[in-house]
Image 1 (cartoon, rainbow, N blue to C red):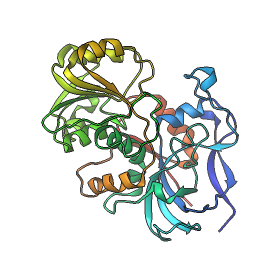
Image 2: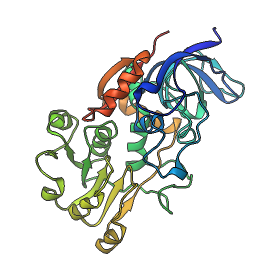
Image 3: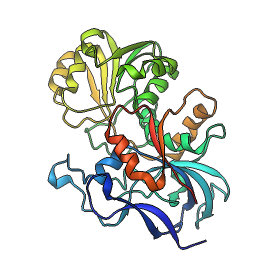
Image 4: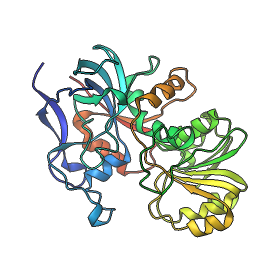
Length: 339
């Protein structure tokens, strides 16, 4: 096996044009790890934030990167080598994972490449009934939905609040998902539906048919009607969008309900939420092979499906990032990796 591989690397921060498809050293599996030949890798918002140097963050929070670095966390591929002390997976098995997140949040986990080393605790067998493209589209978005709505699954400190996030029972409850057409949102809709909730999806009109097919009973086209103007007595709002004015959703939640924020930075309504008896909560998604194995059963039997917005060859990662920056994404953008 060659000691080099093709990868997409950053040598400096900037726009999509700083993504360079080039030769890079092929990683070696460390103790407890396996080496995976990547068949597909998906884009996630942190990929774009890191490429841009996290300019939206305060200067003291921005990464001090060690260039060159390889971005990307979500992969699906084949085990080609097993490191010392690793025993869960065999050469030749198809696997998928969210790699080293958030541990490598500021440096890049290495998914935009032909090979990646992965700790075996972060891996799960790829569901047999879906292909590598859909499997690569799942990990971060599906784990986010799982850890918000089903089980956090770890006791690591929560960077967003003093207490651990706690999912709430959803059977028979009404859940509104804002940003329901995106990578996280369309999986939030399906997980909430699977847990027995009545789901209201909020997105642009182009997503309505898909989201109703995925289980949403009601749909609000935010380009025509503000969700807070029509939704009432909701048990839980999941905001998968973020940005200013997230507190507008407090008015649609019944007393004792909850507002879950995928990106809580900038939320300014805690005092008002306390007065209304509404729990506001968030959590940081973390890699988990165990949870991917559990959720993978739902992917395998079709209970949950990953929607693909578009695919690009690895060499065209810059074009994929351009697509991501255009907005109105339906599902996930995936890079297809060849030998």
